[in-house]
Amino acid sequence: MRFDDSLATILSADTATPFGAQTAWRQLVDLMGRGRVLADPPMLARLGDLRGSVPEDVRAASARALSLCRPPAALVAFFASDDLAIAGPVLRSVTLSDAEWLSILPELTPRTRSVLRHRRDLSDRVMRGLENFGSVDFVLPHVAEVEPAVAAFKAAAPAADQEPAQPEARAMPSPDPEPVERMDKEPAPVAAWPRPLSTSLDPIPTQAATPFVALGQVARGLPFMAEAMRHAEAPAAPPRYEIADLVARIDAFNQRREEVAGATQSDAGPAHFDFETDVHGSILGVDGIARAPLIGVSIAQTVAQGLAQFDGVAMGAFRSRSGFRDARLEIGGLSEASGSWRVSAGPYFDPVSGQFLGYRGSGRRPRRDEIAATTSPVGQVDAASSDSLRQLVHELRTPANAVAGFAELIESELLGPVAPVYRERATAIRSMASDLLAAVEDLDTAARIEGQVLELRPTIVPLTPLIQRLLGELRPLAELRRAEIRFDPPAMPVSALADDRASERLIARLFSVLLSNCVVGERLNATLGVEGGMAMLRIDRPLALTVETEAALLSEAGDGDQRDGAPLLGTGFSLRLIDKLGSEMGGGLTVGLHRVVLSLPMSGDQRAGQASTG
Image (cartoon, rainbow, N blue to C red; front, top):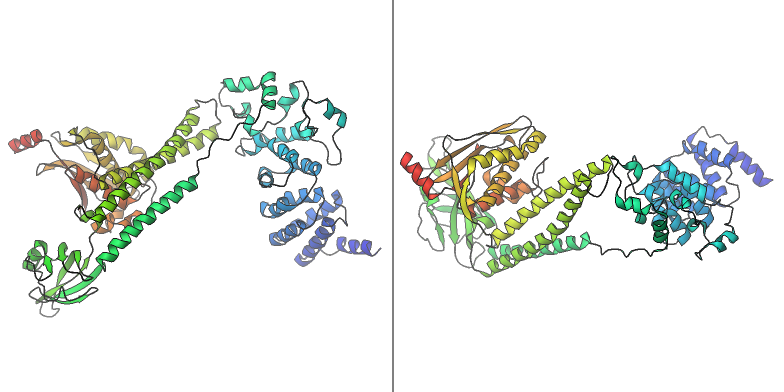
């Protein structure tokens, strides 16, 4: 009587307030989970009424508490119908009989059934029941025909309180008496069951967008094929290509490069210093490095002054009292200041009289692309790193090509009819794989340039039709960015003496980088001309890049900014690659204040023709 009185108190409690609803929820779930109250429809309906008034964290706590006891199947099904954060703890740890699991499987959603697939303590009988929902769970939600599969499973699965009849099991050719594997000799029940995904590789007929039916799908529908596939052993799983192994190799490669670069930088000493000169150009003060090698050295002289020596850039700027940038400075000896430097400075004047007082500037270590190739041990390490990078690029290219090829097969329906939603996914995958392959090709080109193994075959390349064709191919990118590159072809044909494939890749990459950095409605003008025996392609600099200096654009800091349609490896990497590839062909890239200029060498005959015309 006391228990009945307490239950009546719970059922009659005031649940209008949040506290009352939560208290009643906890007590009812606890009593039903311990079996002291039947999980019958009235009690479950009462829990359903309370669920809307109970916060999610309280329901989740009740779900975790159920995992410590053995709740009835009806209560498990009730919690499984809640959000996945609440249903997950129950389905991951609760214990039920095989018959109870089979009875609630049709009531679960694909997401909750996926929780059960990760359990390792369920019997083979329950796992076979889960396999029969593969044709429903492993397709896109708005494509799957869920209701017929669930209805078929309900018609074939036994009730929770009913055991399969033993005489039928003895009449079966298979020794397993479990009802999930039961199959009569007629082929009709075979078609009624939802087949596992491993034996349903062809598209579902209801998903076909065309009347075409694949031959494999027709063959598997034959009775003797269905019987043979039922008795056949499951095929061995193909060897898996572990992406984690490839990622680990990339991390190890980057770590080795960082160690080598770190050792080189530590040997070179500090990476920056500031200085100030007097009116005669002699350095008076230095901050950031050892002062002894630079104090008293004049920037107005190019001869060696002790351990330091400036080039002619600083001397020419000093004579005109103008600023200079990236002048070369070599410091000998064994101090922390020894090595190569790039110095930039500007004049400063007396604010009252306007008299010239000297220069103030700074120095930095040169970038790798500013250092001439040597045969030092560091160069040997770079060559080894380049070989390792090319091998890694090869391993990246292989799976990327496979993904792109298979996505193209699905998109073009070469393997049979495919639902429109799958074709859209295949198109997106193929596009992403193409972007990845382009990045891989850029890495391969950079590695070949760094390892000095890039093969170029110079030939005559007409630039005007090449530029017009590339701009047409890049029209989708221009429409995406809502920008435009307007090219005015020259009156006279202009050709370059360069590798045709490298030239096409060079100009296409330059156009794509500039378009990806355009703002909405921006229009860039491109012109092609001849200057000093070089073919010069001049393109307006996008507004988004006008705030950056040339050094900032070509540095690694420009690799982090990503926009729609931008190269995967970043703007800075692409511009550096264009500059290096152009240099390999005898030209280069110059980033001016308002324009970007790509220069390529011209053929001897055309240079002679231009000279005679001039």
